[in-house]
Amino acid sequence: VVLSIGEINAIMGSSTMEVTSELDEMTDHSADVSDAECLGAVYGAEEPVYAGSGWTDVLDQISREEGDDNEHWVEQTVVLYPSADKARSFFDKSKATWESCSNYTVTVDDGGNEYDWELGEVTAEDNMIIQITTQSDAEGWGCQHALSPVSNITVEVWACSYSVGDEAATIADDMVGNAAK
Image (tube, rainbow, N blue to C red; front, top):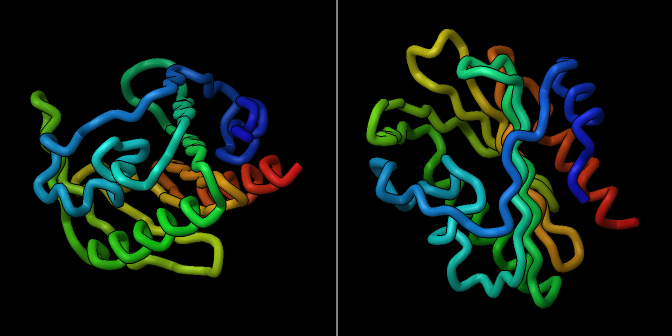
């Protein structure tokens, strides 16, 4: 379901991104955010966000350029549920959460640095929600976040750069296409 690194590089306008992390478990950054209710609008593949959704398996893959200051960063998450209804229910719950967190600032403190993320308006379609988040005082660094259900899975994508556009929605659409095959 996830896109190849070649496809990711092409969509992001890079040629040097590589897969740097691939996890088959959820994480928990809830202690790092100023408002845990908005955790799912700030991070992907978070245990507290997916808790109670009935999910059974996860793949979370991060791609970026080498080094500490990347020009592009992508997270592709695929979550498996026992039924299409469970996947749709998670999507609907996420849509409500993202909308309640729109036009809001969440502070992330990772123990060494503190960042403010400005959460934009949510664009909602029948099968996809999209939100732009911008990091304050970061020279334009921002992310597009997209989530979509397909059959008994959800695909969630973060696409980040200094000139964020519609990359996460494009990647999510392609992932949905892969899942439908």
